[in-house]
Amino acid sequence: ALLRPKPQILSGKQVVITAGPTREAIDPVRYISNHSSGKMGFALATVAQQLGATVTLVAGPCQLSTPYGVERVDVISADDMLQAVEAVIDAADIFIGCAAVADYRPQKVGSTKIKKNSESLVLEFTRNPDILATVAARKKPPFTIGFAAETNDVVNYAAGKLTRKKLNLIAANDVSDTQIGFNSDDNAMTLLWHDKNNELQQRALGRDSKTAIAEAILTQANQLLNNATS
Ligand code: CTP
Ligand code: CA
Image (tube, rainbow, N blue to C red):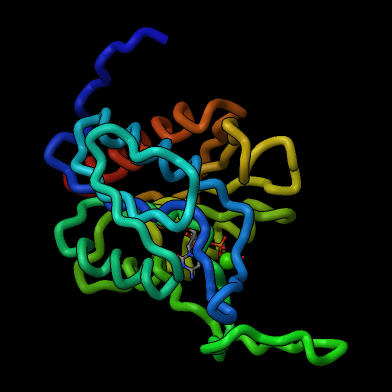
């Protein structure tokens, strides 16, 4: 595509985005994590910057280069990610929780390597803080956007998260389709939000590059943000 400058619809806006997986330590040499590549969050950061926003990208461990003009904060665990988000969230107009945050972390982190001295091993897990819900529950929350990766009943589960976490917008995707999503360059999404009458609205975004999906999400968010303040 030609490098035509994009309309600066987000100029003057501060956008904070989480991306990638988190890693939860088991002992000094091991962790649990997931297959998130970080591509969707990095695409959002790239496009938000191109649309004129000031962007902070809080990234879990991923093999991607920092988008042009974006401030990147690297983190490892969900606790680290929450701390990094809280350090920058006061100034944010828009928060996008795109990270695949580990839901649980090992309850006890061994200070020494666990030895294989038994036939089986049981680990106990503790729930991690929900970064997205924590941001949305602030006194003056930014416009808050979540993602929902589901294998079944996609719209219902996503609408539940929209309401429960008090989000302004959620982007739902069907991860049972292994061709797209996690490590792919493409994605397909359904955007869900509540209108002024609290009616659930939805808009399907067909399969496209993560960059194009990112632009559609940010454009929709900007429209809702402008409606709310006009
Ligand atoms: N999220 C978060 N912090 C967590 C867990 C999730 O910020 N500890 C955010 C994700 O970045 C995503 C949204 O919440 O934007 C939904 O994540 P998802 O894993 O789909 O939902 P959960 O609420 O964790 O529920 P479940 O995994 O049981 O479906
Ligand atoms: Ca989860």
